[in-house]
Image (tube, rainbow, N blue to C red; front, side, top):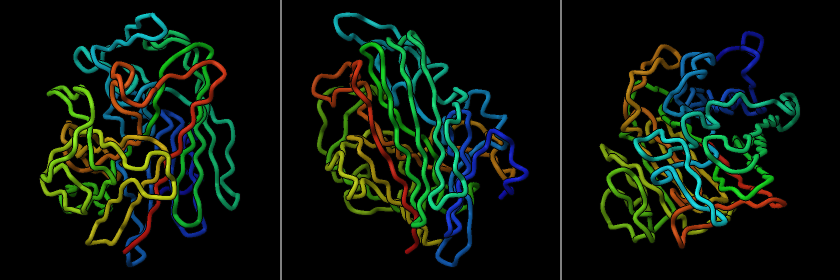
Length: 333
């Protein structure tokens, strides 16, 4: 891992007393690297990331970046709000994905506060999305506050305010590979998700309506199971939305003992096995990233919620504050 003195100015390390280290980019508020120990005390980077910070100036498969204004898909790239229809940018066929062609993952976020040397290091980032950005109504002011605890928990607080009615759902898109060897597939990872239902979708990932109960097949992770060659990209309906005292999901890598728990206030969790990364992409340490070398667990509102009656309401009004919190806690077993 690079020393602080050799890092570009756009990279902001957070290090705790336990030895965990996170490096965050201003471009896309990106979790670029995340180093945690295995059961033998050996540290390794467990997230995929492009080879250099400069590489994030161009489009990529959202390696570690923030998603917004709206994470996941909006059907036909349009929605109606307060009697008015809005056309969004199309960047996945006729649909809108993760905020559009130039979403929050492409933005250069402003550093408001950076305290790397305090007991719990903190980084606060700000981005203003103007009225009409990617077709969304209203000016949206966004703040992300990253903090790193000594128990190896990385937390991100998300806050947004608007001057006109709009829709918002932010998330992050880190690709995890707990083996610490990004050239290795994720097939041997063991997953658990606290969800009995998912939102059904068509072939293009667009929701078809009310959540359905998971069958007992390869997409049900209420009991821990090894991923194997499962190909999954779906939104899970969490049993305890808003409860930060209970994990929403966990990932275990048996060979190294690394164990990740995700806590979130969000109602949904998109699980993606990275089957469409494409590439190869030039990654850190000279690794070329291909499909299935990282898995994503994106805490979010439901996809296409602006168009789906009965889904959690994604609307933000003037005078209101959008808040959500997601925590990634690392340990060994």
